[in-house]
Amino acid sequence: MSFIKSFSTVAAAAAVAAVSFGAPAMAKNFKIAVGDSGGSSQEATGLGFKQALEELSGGKHTATLFLNGQLGSEQDTVNDAAIGTLDMSLLAINNVTPFSPTVGVFTLPYVILSLEDAETLTQGPIGQELTENTINDAGVRIIAWTYTGFRVLTNSKKPVKSVADLNGLVIRVPKNEIMIDTYKSWGISPTPMAWSETFAGLQTKVVDGQDNPYTTINAMKFYEVQKYVTEIRYIFSIEPLIISEQVFQELSAADQETILKAGEAATAASAQFLRDKEAEIKQILTDKGMEISVPENNEKEFIDLATAAVWPKFYESIGGIEKLNTVLAAIGRDPVSE
Ligand code: MLT
Image (cartoon, rainbow, N blue to C red; front, side, top):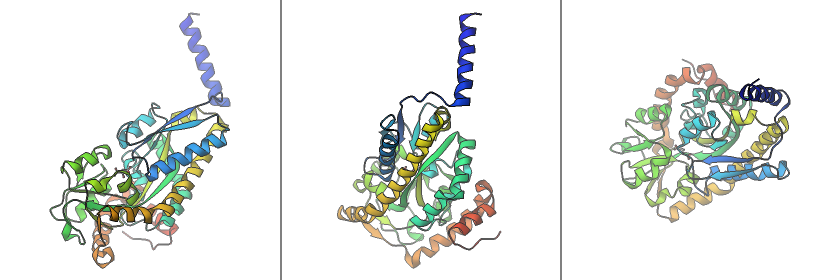
């Protein structure tokens, strides 16, 4: 038997053994890509995960956060994790949707109306089902959820209180069809742009505005290039921590359990961060000179236009109107009909 043949036979046997009995429990430093900067909700989740991982593994495993998109755009990190060249990534759910369309139900405008809705949905059977779907569709497993708050609209040109006020503004959105169509329902054609390019886009005035939660706007220092905030509440931003399914399957059963438990601790840390910090951060942004407007008529025009145009268009990709109705029922809302 040649060396190569005998080596590959041994390697194959080792692989079978690893699958059957779990790989040897080796210490690992998990590399986590983080789209946002220090001080963000994503960082709070990442630090919560790292701390719990170190405690639960008795110091055997640790994690390193690579903040501010150092490891690539959020959508690119999904591909990297899928092929196993990246361990983990913390990113907005809207940047997972292109790879696993059913998670789009969390990006449909005006479905999630509070942090409590977000917790109920992500931590119950629906979150579990979407986790399974991302494994099958995208080769990544959601192990924690970041609750970042409602995405508010910012721009550098003028106060916006009504749909008509959007006229003339160039708004950046993620490369996400649901978000693009939501702005179209409000009468403007937004500009899809990667998150990693957004600050520069705002600074150079290629785009006038964007939307993201208060904690993100503060962490990313958008107050340096944006003046006006409109408190639209069309998406409650959820940002999962994903692990490469390939990397996860290479871990021993005990290590997999540790990872999942550390993920639960990270989810709890994220909710605590939002509850503790959001109001304080909103005040910081006001102190830095941002002007906050509330949409007229309790946002009715924004809500009516977006739900009428966008929901039906995406029933199929999220798994059918029944899926939306299951989500609405889980948070105590009335069903919709065709
Ligand atoms: C986006 O707008 O692409 C995301 O919300 C960015 C983020 O991860 O905060």
